[in-house]
Amino acid sequence: MSFLMKSSMAVCVLFLSLGAATAAPGDDAAKQQEMLEKKFEKQMSGATLVGHFTVDGKTNGKPPREERYEIASVKKLEGDQWLITARIKYGQNDVNVPMPLNVFWAGDTPVISLTNLTIPGLGNAFTSRVMFFEGRYAGTWQHGKVGGNLWGRIEYADQKSETAEEQ
Image (spheres, rainbow, N blue to C red):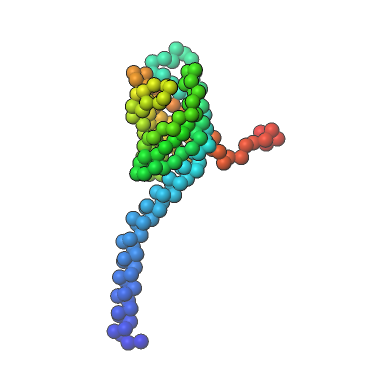
């Protein structure tokens, strides 16, 4: 092979590799984000949040209150908009509620963000920020002038239940 032909091939290979290098990071980031979103949808659909919450200024020496939210489904709509259908038990109410809300990402960590949401049968002005990571959740909540913190573990729908023999 002549020197000119080898040089031409080397230049072509260089341009091709540069083109691939400049296109790949954006494509890889988009693919990785899509994978994170699909994982979040799958893991949270059918999951149950089991934990506790506090009410600011209402400790009175009592332990934090228990809470349980059953997530029926999680579906990405478009952009940051998601539809989460959850069973909410609040006071005497026990309802399944589809809630349109935002999910933002802190790297690989989803953070649910809702602001002044009206929940039929429960009232209006519900605001919260809740992050999910490694089988746990934590965040803040506000309903009108009352607010506090919440945290706990996530029981995923695809987790194998322990039998009595395994416990």
